Amino acid sequence: MNLLFAGFDLAAAKNLIMVAQAAQIKNHQVTFIGNQLMSRFIIGDKPDAIITGLASFKTENELIFATMARDSKIPHLVIAETHFSWARPKAEGLMTHAICAVASPAEIAEAKKWGYSDAVYLGGPPLWQAFRRLKPAQLVIPEDTKVILVGGIKDARLTDMMLAEVAKSIKALAATHGIKLQLIFRPHPNEPAETYNEARRKGILEGVEPLPSDAPTDNLISEVDVSIFTSGAMGTIIAPILRKPSIYYEDDWVCKRMVSQIGRKDWLPAEEGALIKATPETLTAELEWMLKLKEKELSEHHEQLSACQAGVYPDPKPLSSPEEEILFFIEKTWQN
Image 1 (cartoon, rainbow, N blue to C red):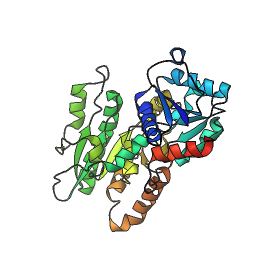
Image 2 (cartoon, one colour; image 1 turned 90 degrees about the horizontal axis):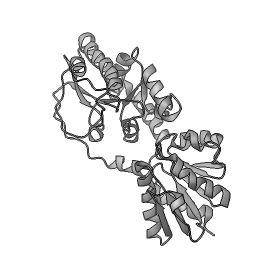
Image 3 (cartoon, rainbow, N blue to C red; image 1 turned 180 degrees about the horizontal axis):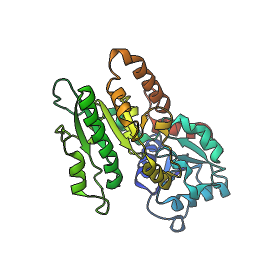
Image 4 (tube, helix red, strand yellow; image 1 turned 180 degrees about the vertical axis):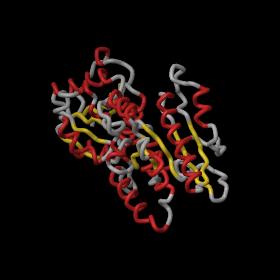
């Protein structure tokens, strides 16, 4: 087959490259467009299918190819790079010809309703499968101590609002229940100067005992007792993929940020029960419950959480990969 791939944002392009490489291995003809506009690209032979993403910042470039696919009646597959990335506002009304490969089976019905001709789950974004191979961090944890991991987002001000509530909960659990807790805090590496305040953060963390570790955030998720993330951070996806207990922190500011980013306040893994949602009012109680998930009397709840996580992020098919599943779907659907 003659396959044209078009991806203009980093994450979307990386997913497409993985599928394109799988196609090359099977001797398909592959053209990949990454950093040039359609106006500067002339297609020779009409492609058998066009495969795109829908990038958060460069949707306009990808819509050139979506329009071409629709007008020329070329099969078009959109590969979602994350939850709801298939629903960029600028793309609405232009995808009646396209099929969407969603990030989770929980999105299929909504993607169809949004306007795609069909929606399928083919294993999720290929990039996500690397999370299953993450090497666990090596932590030295004192006896009878629980460890909480908090990961920040780019907006340091919102990170600190969450961090302040976590610090309050840690102190409350230590005072009222005698739970020994240590904190690993990982700020986002790209916090902008306009929202970062060193004195504010130092004050928030005063009285909270840190657990030293140089390990990356992703590698820590499988080793701590509970991780806490917010606002669609990648940790909110990694934790349930690894079947690890994690809290999704949400308040009014987080909801406003989500609306500005993806057009909705809700984050799918939290709404589907793959994460435990907590607000400032419920965080202490939810954190206490999560810290007991591994205890015998709560094993049933742990199994229920794992089942919800598996529903949102199913185990991969044996002897296959998402990029191979996507390529097989393309061949099965459109190969003459």
